[in-house]
Image (cartoon, rainbow over all chains, first blue to last red; front, side, top):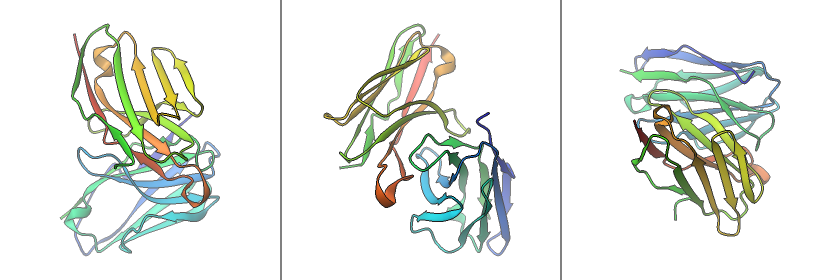
Amino acid sequence: DTEVTQTPKHLVMGMTNKKSLKCEQHMGHRAMYWYKQKAKKPPELMFVYSYEKLSINESVPSRFSPECPNSSLLNLHLHALQPEDSALYLCASSQRTGDEQYFGPGTRLTVT
Amino acid sequence: QKEVEQNSGPLSVPEGAIASLNCTYSDRGSQSFFWYRQYSGKSPELIMSIYSNGDKEDGRFTAQLNKASQYVSLLIRDSQPSDSATYLCAVNRGYGGSQGNLIFGKGTKLSVKP
């Protein structure tokens, strides 16, 4: 089973809202990732968690705040987003960093 | 020089033909290489991984890696219309603090005509 789940599938939020994206995997993977993908562009890495510790932050604005409550869950907290933050947000996991990454279905975010 | 380069296409092949997708990378220290397929509006799906020089076959797919030339390719035999998608080449530096940092090429759009 190589399933990564993400909720919600779609999210529309205003610039003053606070919302959270959730990601879950039950494959025993110890590395989890957040990516942002704009239309017709490749995914761009935002954050990497390894053994529940943040190991890579790709200079992401502070309005995006990741959290890894346990080895199966990954959250992305959103606050004061801009319209240009509208994108597909992808979660992925792998056994360890450097291994094959499996992506969830994504959350399509629209900021109005 | 971009880190991972692919021809953006579109690459059009007839049904039943071999589709050949190419990728070059700039970081000679890169350790692992992946091909993902992405249908429009969907998330990337892993189809092949390759870690050492040579060929790796899985069904209709063959990945080829040449580290000396910094070149990765994907061959799709007996192409089907359902193979029509964007194919993303991804490279993992795989060392030190960059491990886990997957760098994607811009993707090649493949169209298989019935």
